[in-house]
Image (cartoon, rainbow, N blue to C red; front, side, top):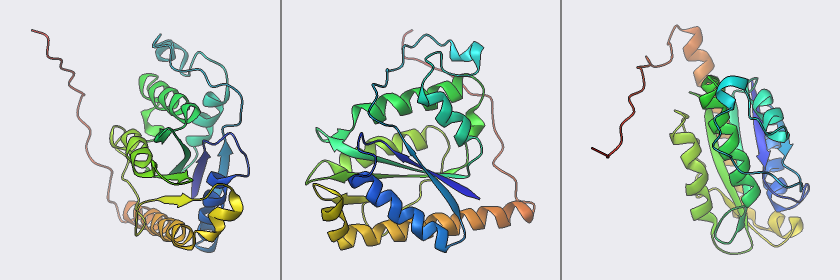
Amino acid sequence: MKVLLFNGSPHKDGCTYTALKEIANTLKEEGIDSEIFHVGDDAIASCKACRACAKLGKCVINDKVNEFVDLAEKCDGFVFGSPVHYASASGATTAFLDRAFFSASVSGRGHIFKHKFGCAIASARRAGTTATVDQLNKYFTISQMPIVSGRYWNMVHGSNAEEVKQDIEGMQNMRFLARNMAWLLKCKEAGLKAGIEPPKQEDVIWTNFIR
């Protein structure tokens, strides 16, 4: 089993990474593999709403988004981490995840995320964390992904990595979250071995409010 940890910060080894690394270390203790995927500091284009992904099987914009989606297909759980920029997730995180989830869904690769566990964490100097976590959780709820919780809101505080390490409650919560993720992954594996299949799927019904 493997968990993919998404670092939506432009800083590879900054605050968000520090929280994700704590999760990775705890997952390892629980016998779960993990990998940290760093978005980087290159510009991430937003979705063009061209729907070319329906024909191509991937996003038409050839950057790290397609690399991430291919990697995600082989993973069993996800942690999406973002710094707080103006009381919400970073622009790069939003543009990246919009395209990753949309292209996977429209191209018929929705199984990449469906019924896999996900959780969101946020890093901030002071405020905007709960709004960021709420924003990121929407990617899970639209994709039939059970959300993994910690014992408090999934956030750490600090202006740099060393300050984040001093947020002992926040860092402890990262460990709670990791152990909960590991437990749920093992429960799912045990359930599949016992013959418990994923929920039955219906054909999707699309509606709008224009009569």
